[in-house]
Image (tube, rainbow, N blue to C red; front, side, top):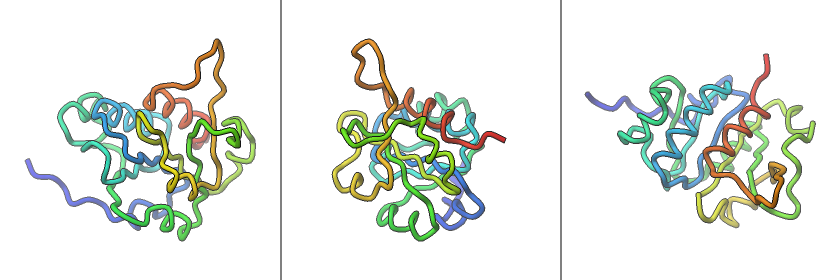
Length: 165
């Protein structure tokens, strides 16, 4: 079996309205679960930075339940956020920041094109990545819980922010 050639970013973004972005998600299990959530919640594609685990790693593809072979995805090495802005995407990063807006904010769903960014398991989004965000977004928590695992957060975010046709 040989790997297919990766899609170009242009091919992935053509006609896309909702994109998932994994920014340095290192754990193959999380990568697979996020791919599965993106496919299940009707995201148009997934972009991974080169700091992410390989979606074709056996554990990642198994956890994805094969969706890694169904949903469009690619890897981008540099300039990702600038390129998303060039394609008129607004960028919403999940971040535990004081200035983050609630994920239920209606403005998010009103954006014609939205890229939903998930950061590293331990560090979240880097300061450099945060500067590129049009929105910093938080999922409201209860009972003193401050955050979800990145894979769990992806399912909530994609459900809330994906196409509802």
